[in-house]
Image (cartoon, rainbow, N blue to C red; front, side, top):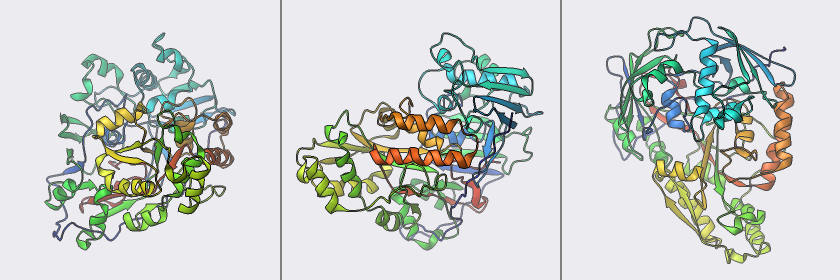
Length: 517
């Protein structure tokens, strides 16, 4: 079988920037203590099960302990991970994977092809949505395993300890590149259903040492890691809270790294005190306002959706609110992954917006049912602008904030009138956005949008192994989404962080991960 080419994209992201501190404080760059790295995160996930992970923060932490078949470097290139080679049939329905030799789990057991198959099956055995569902949904036997009529994924065959064959019911040109954590499932099952709270069973550079739920997670260096020595003996993940709390802890040398919240960004960028500590990298992310037409009748009218989009001055937001460390995307796929010249720029035109509202039967917004726009607290200031723009045009929107865990749960159920929806790529291919968010059968489709022509294009693209030819189909598919505008694209800020001098500039990846290796 001819090998599928590994894809590359131009990771056009910034390096170290001139930066900032808050309210005149004189910051001290944090230093790691005794071989330890302390990472501040807004909140820590309630559970860290690598088989059911479905949020970015959990993925950032788990990335220190677990690996996938392939990896992505800081430039967005696909590299071998636990698979050293992968080959596809011409129709991308059959894959042959070569599993890396000489790798040992944290439990002491060797990695084999059977371990990989069991990880696939265990990831599908639970209830609810997770990242593994997206990667494995086209593999033969997926539906039966999810329906619990079998415990085996029939499309995956172990040829020998180093070789795995995968058969898909549909073309699946990106199968090996998805993030599926490979776990010593046998050891996990022996330890009981809450095994992940007390142990790790991965192959990554660090292994779990201690976890205090919601407060702190400590991992220690894995002496048997295939990549050799790691830069820190121990890494601690600490819950800092939102807003300026993480910045204060960094300033007090209590953490060595912390992301800067969107609402705190301007204060940091405007103060020169953190010039040598601030770094940023462009996000491989889609950020949109999801509008649910089941809950608000007016959202079903394209003219209303277009009017709401036309009332946002994205260029002004990127330059003024985000101080230039943000990108305006004219579509739903980051331009670094798909440079789509067929898309029209997202204009700011209040006059046209008013005319569209009138044509839709809602002159000056009259007749639109009042609705809420729900976000997590750290995005409140940004959304004050959007909601005020809509209110000024007569659109009766009200901004509401919700605690993070409640927001995640309810937005997945589409339990809000409208809400902020963000999606970060886990591998460098536009399919990560198009198929996984907008196909009619995707469980992560934010508003239930459905388009048969779009579904056909996605299926066609999945059968094309050549990335350049596949990109042309992707462009047509993205144009269909933007023509119907089921979601309203927003400005995408960079990942901005404060880092001590113990960390390199490439510690943050464009995919939201942290470079522990």
